[in-house]
Image (cartoon, rainbow, N blue to C red; front, side):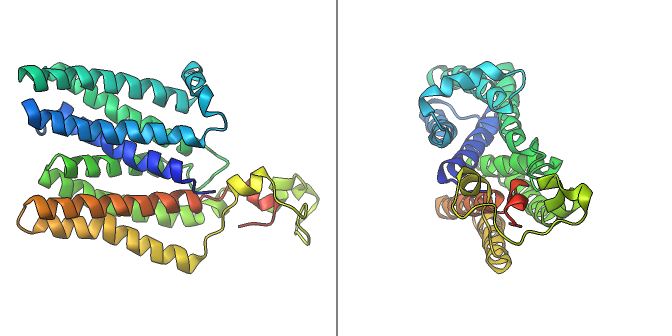
Length: 290
């Protein structure tokens, strides 16, 4: 699929932001006064900034409020409601820390659960799509949640948790790639099923359906060379997993912490670009694309 920058920014930054809110809600750490203010500002800039970036991918951004009306059937709508609930809950919890030095623990726990639920809802926007076999797997949601927790642990300076979630991210990311490379073939979708002509025998395309481009080709068909994808996967793992773990293994200070966070975020961006660029929508079969 077409890797739109707005969606890459949205899924990367909002996830890390809500990941940080998760740890703040659990009191890991439990800052007060100005320290708490800084932590919450960072979390909200990432979470809200990512959510705002997603509106740029809407056909009619001015109609974004309509997204709240379809919560019964739409994961996008559920994500909208959960994100608002999480942000409001954590704002109240954060106000207690900033202005009164008081941590209302039950409120923080609720905010943490809502933050994780928001990340899960974001992942389900993609994981529910049977038309994109690479996404249609539980590993998609697991990957979104674990990546968010790894980023949140890094930003909250929870070194042990960060190490654990970074390693988990690496394992799940590799498993997702391995399974994803076979997903379209295992789905049973072919040019015959895509065109509806398979019942008459093997279907082969000898000419494209039309000579020009269209919306489907622009949005749902994006071909990435295998060698190019392999290089980007290695770069992603080095930046997202390897470098942060190496930085955290050294003496912890502001420099090593900054390197760990910056390289991790850069790696997440590469991973998310591949997440979208390598997602083979079955409509591509109609156009002879694999």
